[in-house]
Image (cartoon, rainbow, N blue to C red; front, top):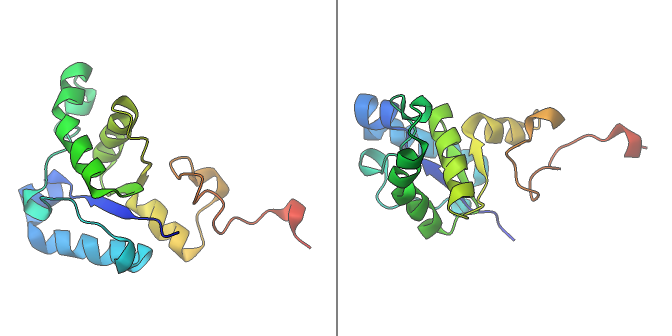
Length: 148
């Protein structure tokens, strides 16, 4: 079984700052880590991707119901990919999409980009796996009690 991943294009760095070239760089890194065959792009994507609704202070605004309603489109977009995981390069995106997944019943894990990079390098610590699903929690984990 192959695990499938999609990626959120963060508004600040993609749409507001560097545009599609940085979105391409993001995809290069993601595909290098998870394998091109395991990557599914959201539609639309890059500079046209939908905002998750967590940035610009909205995550901390106190308007939780409105934030979750705004993010419903993002949740539907992620689910439409059929991906097992959503990768977020932005902390606000991560927190918002994680909450969307729980709120709307998607139950897809949301992982930080750095988590997958470290996992692929074999340097992700046992205490840094909180957002990994059961299928990845034990990848490259050294268990001294079972070592021979």
